[in-house]
Length: 234
Length: 284
Ligand SMILES: Nc1ncnc2c1ncn2[C@@H]1O[C@H](COP(=O)(O)OP(=O)(O)OP(=O)(O)O)[C@@H](O)[C@H]1O
Ligand SMILES: [Mg+2]
Image (cartoon, rainbow over all chains, first blue to last red; front, side, top):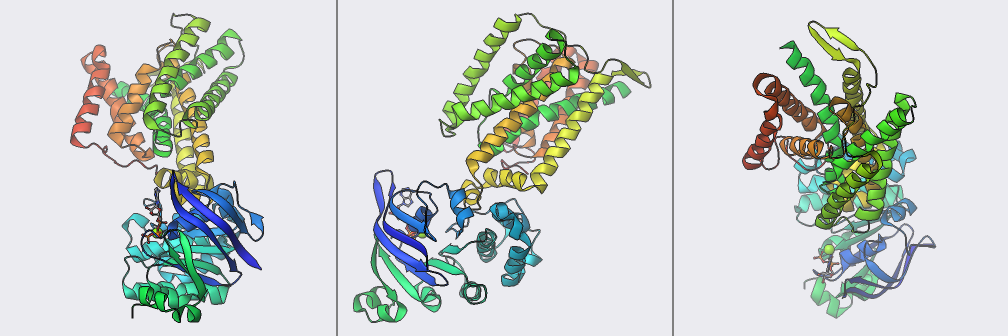
C-alpha cells in the first residue's frame, strides 16, 4: 500500500511558486531518493508534506488527507522529519532533544530510545552533552534520532550529508540502510550528492525548478543520457 | 545586620517570583510584555475584592487572584498576541496601552486612593531582635515553592521540555509534534498567574494602588536584564542581588534612593554585558 500519495502539489512562498504540480507516491518499506540542484525545491517539498508552506493539491498519508492539519498533527499521524538545518534545541542535552521528539509518542519512548542508541551508539555516550556543542555529524545523528522518536510511519531526511566528511556520510548511509532493512522503515531522502542517493535508494525522483523532471529506478535513470550527463558526472 | 538579611531574603524571594513570569514570556513567546505589571495590579485588586470587599477567606482571595491572572494572560494571548502573530513592536505597544486602560478600569471600580491589604496570615514571628510578619514569611515560602516547582516542571516534564524547545527552535519543536501555539498559550496563562500571585504579595508588602504595575515592571526588567533573559537560576540570583541592594540602600543610606541603584545596575550591565550576566534568551 502507498504510505504517501502526492497529487498535483504546488507550493508558494507569498507570490513566488516553489513547487509546480508535483505528483508521486511512496510504497511501504521503500527508500526513495529526491535529487536536484540548489533551489530545485527539495526542502520545500518536505516542508510542504509537514504542512509548513502554502500549498494546493493533495497529500495523503496512509490514505488520510493531510490538508488543513497542523505540523504537530502531521507528526502525530506518522511523519518524522530531519530537516536540512536540523533545527535542534542547542541548549538541551542530546537526551532531552530526543525526548522532545517523543512528545506525541510517549508510550514508545523506551523502545524508540533503544533503537536510536542501537543505530547511533555515540548518542548514548553523549547523552548529557548539549547539542549546541556537538559536531555536525553528531547533530545530524540527533536530528535523525529525534525524528525516529516520533514513531514515524514515514521518515524524511533532508540532505543528511551536507557539509559532512565522506566517512561520516558512509556511517549515516549505513544507519539509514539498517533502518530500512532491520526496522522496516519507509524513507524519503533528498540529496545533491547523487552518488550517496544511488547507494541507498531503489527509486529516484529528479527535481528541477519545482517540478519532477524524471523518475524511475536507479537502473532506468542510468540509461537516460541527459540525466547521466547532468547528475552522474561522466 | 540580621534585619538586613531577613528583609533581604524576604524581598528577594518576592522579586524572583515577579521576575520569573516576565522571563518566561520573553524566552518562549519572544515578547517583551510591558503590560506584565498589570497582572500584579489585577491580582492585588482581585485579592482585595474577594477577601476584603466580599469578606471571603484569604486563601480563596489568593486563588481568585491567580485565576484572574491566568485568564488575563490567556486573553492577551488570544486577542492580542495571536492576531498580531507575535510581531514584537505592535504587541508591545498594544499591551502597554492595555495596562493603562486596565489602570483606568481599576480607578473606576475601586477609586483612586491606595488601600492597605489585611495580612494573609496575621501575627509576627520574632527572630532575635527582628519581628517578621507571618505574611511575609508565607510570601517567601510560596515564592520559593513556586519557583522550584516551575524549575522542575520545565526540566522534567514533557510539557516543560516542549516549552524549552519552543523557546529554542520553533520549527524544531513543531516537527517534534509540539504545537508552538498551544505552548505559547499555556505560557501566557502561567505568566499571568505568576504575576497575579506576585501582585498579591507585592501589594501586601507595600500597598494597593492603581499605578502599582509600574514599580514591579521595572524590577522585573532589571532582574531579567541583569540575569540574562531566560535563566531561572539567573533570575533567582539576580533577584537576590537587587533585593539585598534595595534593603541595604533603604536601611543604611536613605529610603529615597531605593530604586536608584537598581536603575544604575541595569544601565551598567547593559553597557558591559548586553546579554546579562547569565546570558541567553532561551529558558533553561
Ligand atoms: N522561506 C522561503 N521564502 C521564500 N522563498 C523560499 C523560501 N524557502 C525557499 N524558497 C525558494 O524556493 C525555492 C526552492 O527552495 P528549496 O529550499 O526548496 O530548494 P532545495 O532544493 O532544498 O535547495 P538546496 O539544495 O539548496 O537545499 C528556491 O527558489 C528558494 O529560493
Ligand atoms: Mg534544501
